[in-house]
Image (cartoon, rainbow, N blue to C red; front, side):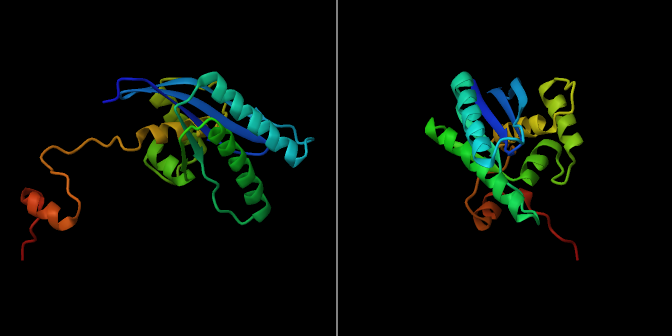
Length: 190
């Protein structure tokens, strides 16, 4: 059980819209500190947008002092230019976190959706609804980039928190598991 609070900054990278969310975790309790989007005007060239992203992530880190940083990994699409832009946005956000020596974790969109909804193919609306349910909040606007960012932070908070099953001894391999837990075996009837 974790008694000291931990702050996690979650980022859903994008070059025109970047979602961000700050989550407070204490024990099994999750609470929302903030969740919003950074909208970057398209009139800025790609390098100016990257600078804006870097400055915003740095500002969030200075303001909320997160202990950990979680970011959504770019998904593989057919448009190479979009992938390149998204990868740059992600890289700049990661560089800002590295500047402050914050531990960084990266999660695929499928992993985040699986952690939040139980379905790796869930839609943005489902993720938003589960974020609302998990954090006991109501989102007045459908800010999917913001809810995706906080979902990344929630997914990160869930990692390594699977409770041990009573009566099952921890094992390093299957042979050791079987010999240490004979009551868990299912015998086929012939």
